[in-house]
Amino acid sequence: MSVDSDDVTVEDKKSDGENEEILESKDNEEKVEEDKEQEETDKNKSKRMYNPWKEVAIRAESERRYMENELIKLQKEVQQLYQELKKLKSPPLIIGEIVDVLDDNRVVVKSTTGPNFVVQVANFVDKSKISVGTRVSLNRDSLSVIGILSSSKDPIISEAEIIEKPKVSFKDIGGLETQIKEIKESVELPLVKPELFRKVGIDPPTGVLLIGSPGTGKTLLAQAVAQETNATFIRLVGSELVQKYIGEGGRLVRELFALAKEKSPSIIFIDELDAIAAKRIDTGTSADREVQRTLMQLLAELDGFDPLIDVRIIGASNRPDILDSALLRPGRFDRIIEVPLPNYEARLEILQIHTKRMNLNKDVDVEEIATKTDGLSGAELKAICTEAGMFAIRENHYSVSKHNFDLAIDKVKKSETLSQIKEMGAMFA
Ligand code: ATP
Image 1 (cartoon, rainbow, N blue to C red):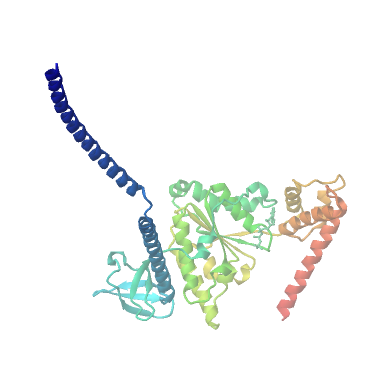
Image 2: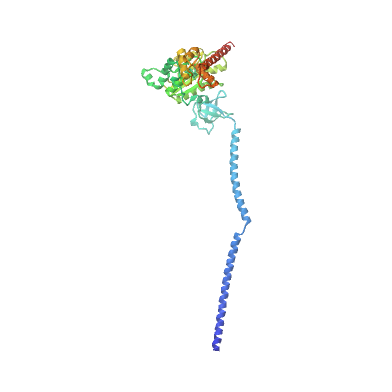
């Protein structure tokens, strides 16, 4: 038993020792693992730990990017300002027109400064675009051609074109039946039925001249014919063609006809033609000579004009007595239509046209007004209607009475006598 018990004790002791070793090694392993874990958590902790330098670095980086963008923006601005400064510092260029193209890169230019010059064409200018009549820009010092300009029209001419058709029809014109018939024949027919003239073998009249006192309806006639024919209406007042510089008036006339051809079918209406077409005299100032040059250009344009193309010319003047006879010869303004002051019937028609939309009292007798207004023009009759309406408004009335018309007739007649006195004064001055 004791042996047995001894044996057990030895074996037990042995196994106890092994167990201890195993336990120890396990403990060690666990410790290593724990250490590792600790290390790991320490690492993570250190990772998670607040690092002020890193934040500073991030902030600096974003600031750098912002600054770079700002720099690019400012550089662009500086560039633009430089360009602007360059434009402001650059001297103005002179506008010229090519008169002749020579060899060796040279051309003859006519500038607005005076005589013609032989000048060089800059290398960067496209030579194929240079021909006689091209508008170019010239260097101020050497006058060499440094740019090609579009052949834009003078604002006076481009503004003369009336985009919206005048809303006037022949029905709005009173007492001018004969004149309407004549203008239809000489302006409307060639535009609407040109084949008629071809078949008969004649040329339609080139130009039509409307003569008569102010306010008799000359402009109205021209507007109505443009409306009826659906033609572009180009209206210019003769005095607009009188320019300060030599050759400018002639250029305007050329541009006027070029625009009319471009926009054909078209009607050129030159009001107050006497401003450029007064009789030519030998003596005179340089200004007179410039006006005469403009007239000569107009005559040249009329002569070189194909009567069968879709452009018609209407002139109007209050002073036919001072017009140059060269303008009135056949082939130029060869159709003269006189627009007289209205007679009783014509006045009645004009008054009926202008009172059509008015709210009239029963006591208003248009026939009586027509009798009272002898010697007045269509424009003055219209003014009477407007004045009568104004008197009614002043009295706080919605309808116009006979009394209002009487006051209006007196007022318009008085202003007419005043203008006559002024005219006489001017004649004696
Ligand atoms: P000016 O020679 O001064 O240019 P004008 O003869 O061309 O004058 P218009 O401009 O045609 O005169 O007429 C001015 C206004 O008078 C017209 O707008 C129109 O209201 C009126 N008027 C003139 N004549 C007539 C008419 N026969 N029928 C209807 N209204 C007329």
